[in-house]
Image 1 (cartoon, rainbow, N blue to C red):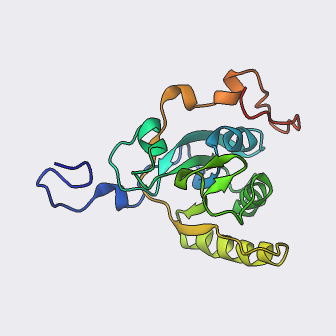
Image 2 (spheres, rainbow, N blue to C red; image 1 turned 180 degrees about the horizontal axis):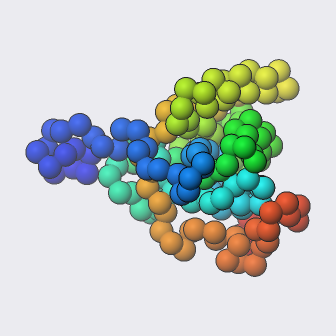
Length: 190
């Protein structure tokens, strides 16, 4: 039996359903972003005032409980994502989007820098109709700044699978500062 079906061999795939997890605190909301390798994207959001928590993992795929190796094997359909738990009063969703656009090149389909593969695609995965509206407006505004077509996908947030523990806060564990407001350059590998 494939990982892509339910216990009866044909039930709907739970991985295609919405991310039903709750934010990690009262008054917090969730956001998901794919912008290449999740390590540096996560550290960027960790440093942002109003962000209470970040998690790296996988979403938007069709393989149940994928591992990093599964996703790198290109057969799961998942993107490397950062799930952000944020206080919208201290850090509006539009600010999260500004960081997203500044962090990567949204005109390359399945590549960020020297990292290539569908897991490195550009994506904004929304939890609410308001997030979708703001994301689409943001994309339209950013498109005016780029000569090339922006290929960022904007889709409902699907089930989130946390990456293995060693990926969580990877660059912070490697000695880079996650202090709020820190502007030190981010090195990709610790």
